[in-house]
Image (cartoon, rainbow, N blue to C red; front, side, top):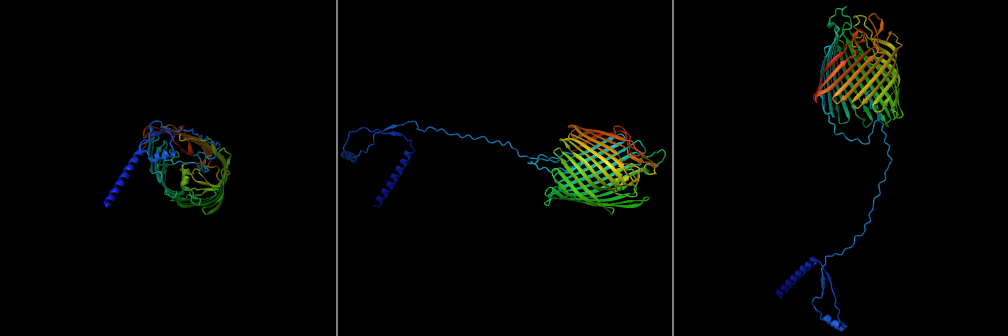
Length: 578
């Protein structure tokens, strides 16, 4: 019995699987359109129909099968295309106003800061260190050699070393000059936007007192020697942008040593510490501290020790807008223990959109007079027996600005009163080859100064200046001995071609008054000095240069009895290691 049931179940499952497979084949077969045609039959009764249904014929009905490749489909309906309307053109522009300062390198200018809309980073610039040596020879036994070297990456640190030596010998007895200079300047940038600056320098100059008639005096060259040695160290710190409290600072400390060949020495320490606090972008408070301490000593026969100290602070309040700037303050000063209160009031106003600025000022300040600074003015002085600082009170009015993109100008009229201004009369002994230092108690000066400059990218630079001074109301001296009443200067730098550069300098001045050994006052002749030079490339790293000094061959005298060299022609090479 169990075998029969097992066999029946197996048979049923097999039939089900076969039927299911056949159904799958029928579904996968291409469907055909089938039309069934019914033939007309005679009418039969209901009973007969029921009997026929009962005896239904199991054979397939008569059908006609039609196979066709035609596939019925619906016609594509027309699609509605939507066309986008053109965008609305906004012709209005947002006004963006820039206050661009004059591109002026000739005088100090404090522009309004520019805020660009977009500032792409310049990734194409690469700092490259450069080293070059210049050497040349000329008439008057002139020999020149100079070198410039740079080190660092240009981002975190940069060091520049300059060294130069120049010597020449004129036709007059003991008309000989030599100079050697060396300086090392380093700049270090820190991560907190501070910049450290250090500088070390040394300078040696050798001259001889040749301003006399050697036929009347039998002097040895060694007895006429005038040699100066100067060394200095500077260190400074400044923040490149205001800190979180809108404070900027730039302290600097300088230590200087100066000595001559007659055991004269001067030690000098200078501290400058300007500080500014800004409020609401338009107001600021300035507080500057200045200290200049100097000690000068001379050996016998003029043995003496002179202390010359100067201190002052400069508190002021500043207001600045786009068209007006005002600085109002005072300058309390201590000049060798004597207290003075000096004014410090300046104003600037912009005239429309012309680029013209009108400036007014009433200021007071001190000019430090030390042994070193006096020899920079007149190298033929003897050791002074006293040193005094010059107090200057100045009222001025002027204009400055730019015309176009290349031309800049400036003019100022000043009225000054000077107390203890140094003058340079001829010493009564020494056949007129020495100069003394005389401090005039008080004198008035009317000064007119003008500047003009034209700059065309890095191809052309033309600068010119003129200064006229009128010295009046001297209390003791007859004239302003040694001070120039008129000076005219000019400078041209022209890169004519890629490998050719032209330069020229001109100096014109009216002669100063002088006092001779007989204590009579006279006036020197006017002078003109024109210098022309050129430099051009001959090899990738080698340039040739030529320099003509005193082209007019005018043997003028800046100081009484000291005649300058005539036409001086130099030539040489410049080699670059870059």
